[in-house]
Image (cartoon, rainbow, N blue to C red; front, top):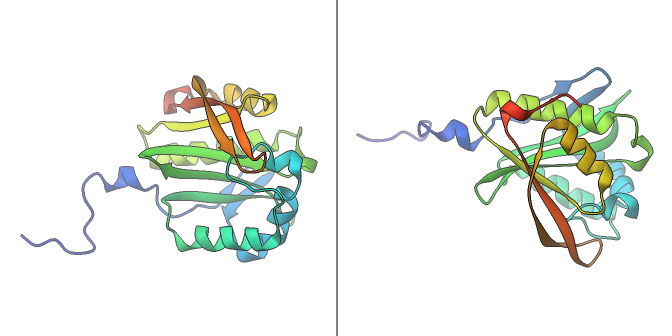
Length: 193
């Protein structure tokens, strides 16, 4: 029996949640990124208060870095979603990313500092996780926070994430090793923040 290119293995649905969706919440719109988001991304990640909490973001961070990242995301080389968090008239204020790394699904997120403490991160992350779990039932999500990021750890606990361990990981913006609290969420444990 020959296999056609369009046929997928029976377990392929577990490997890919499908195309990046558009998700509407009470105050936000999550959508796929566009090249026109580069300036907003560079502005947010150029703020050391934001970039220092992310493992894979360099400091300083420039528009060219944002464009490089957007091109890689658009190429679809990594399975998963990279959702722009937008508010109002499509104002880019952050990102929620869910990607397959080392055989496990991981979620990460960041928000422009001027939008902190408004509940936007919880609203956006919950909406993305809820949609992901609808497409990928039975899948666990992994995440984590730097030990000095109490706000993000508090958000993850509200969402139902459980701490699974601690490790030292390299943070580009800090140019050094940082304590990282590792977390995991199952579909049964997801709560609204």
